[in-house]
Length: 304
Image (cartoon, rainbow, N blue to C red; front, side):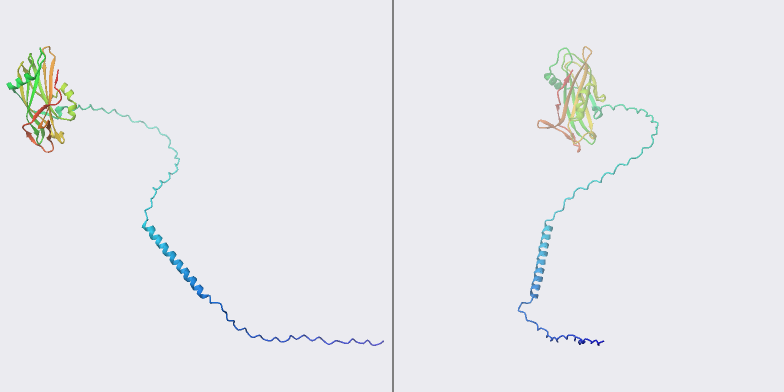
């Protein structure tokens, strides 16, 4: 057997060796021609500060203006608290209770209406002989009916005014019969009230029934004759205010020939003469009693 020749063994491949790299020196800084950026940053910051300062200054100016024109706000009235929801309460069981017996209360009788006598009084009264000239003066001005007595009045105030307690009128009242028949049982009365007082509205009632203490005298008067009554009447100052113009009422009732009653009445205001009127008397500062006072008819005389 022929020997087998071995194939020639190729030598191992050598590892490639990298070529050496030459070191590159660091690059030198390249000088730039652009301007630096920090001035722009400083300028922007300054602009921002200026803007903030301007805004703050304007805000302070606006606040000052608002404070100058500030007005208190109108406050609405507080709303009422809402009503609480009603709570249903269970009612207590009904218990009947006896009703009390109420005794009737007696009603007091109505007080009588005050009359002039309640506020005036006769201080004095005296019957004397009448003056002849007064009788003649009454006869001259009278127009009597035939066949009956016909009484006329002549009022002559003597003094009037106010003192510490009362308003007083002193007067002479002449009652003359100018008729052709005697006047028998002549009942002369007089009382006084203040002009404009409530008593003035009660005159009709008082003339129907004169106050009990107003009677002055009871006489008989022949035809052509007269009786004179000297009297004084007074009103308490406590019932008066401011000033008072006294009004004196004269009333005479007598018996007619047929047995019926005749009546003559007249009212006279008494005061100090003042032009065409009469001056009232002060109540708060008593003036004392004045002479030289006058009497004038207050309303129309009444005759029955």
